[in-house]
Length: 79
Image (cartoon, rainbow, N blue to C red):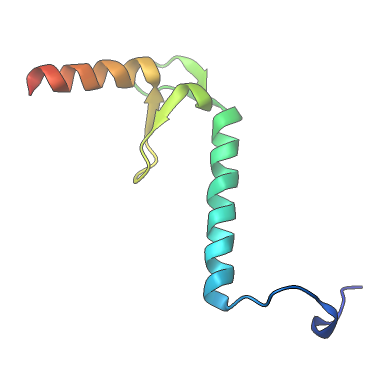
């Protein structure tokens, strides 16, 4: 049986603090899962671990580091 709320100890969080904490935890766990999961690069179709991929933070798209490096070099050459 769960303890009654009056029996809980520790700092009390506001709803906003709790939501921010849960979001940070969720983001961290999702990143850990991605790092250890096999991924298929959508550019070269090689199967690599997420730890060997570059992932864009805003959209979540990823590709293997070799493809991403080639993309960046090409964009720099083009100006």
